[in-house]
Image 1 (cartoon, rainbow, N blue to C red):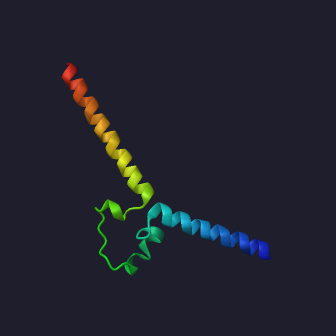
Image 2 (cartoon, rainbow, N blue to C red):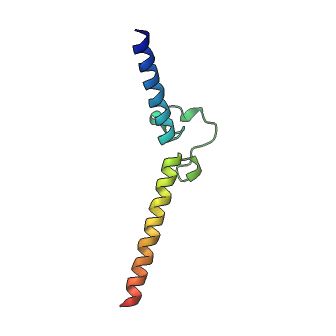
Length: 78
């Protein structure tokens, strides 16, 4: 019984850790703990996002810049 409880406890801690890592502390668990933060939430601020979301935004910006550069180059060659 103790081993089963230990495994469930570890699985729960792993789930909580991944939720906070991927969503950030303000958005984890549907924003349940966001009201504990004294600073106002600003959705436009990138520094308030979690690391994976900031990295994803950086990748999207890089793709947009590459596409714009490609379109400019194709337009100049015509």
